[in-house]
Image (tube, rainbow, N blue to C red):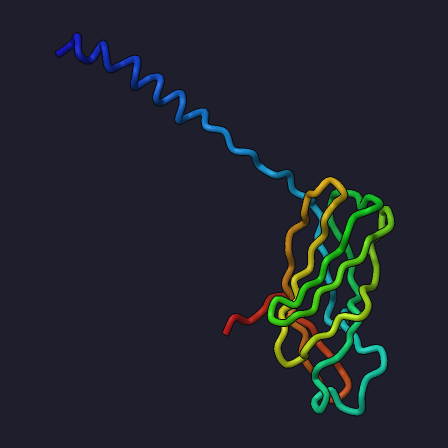
Length: 148
């Protein structure tokens, strides 16, 4: 039995080394995020009633926060994951505040996903925001989207 163990032992050690050293490439993070506050989405020329006309072209007033610098060529993305709206804008170097204009959103049902992509392909964390009608002429935003 000991000879059998001596023959198997090198195979066990080799197997452990191969499995223990398996490689996987981790993508580096872009340590910034796009944020919008509770008044970060606005209708440039509001209709008499947002309740009567909930599908609107809106402007998104965003702020970039985090550790990594914004390099020229960084792209800000906004996508309504419940609709067809998508918008992207290339940012200037060190931009921390900017506006994305012309996103068509149904204010009754939307979930806006916001993120940045650096020129080297790194992506920031993705933030989800829900915009809704607060009154006949006002929109409010909440971080997170209700999945119900």
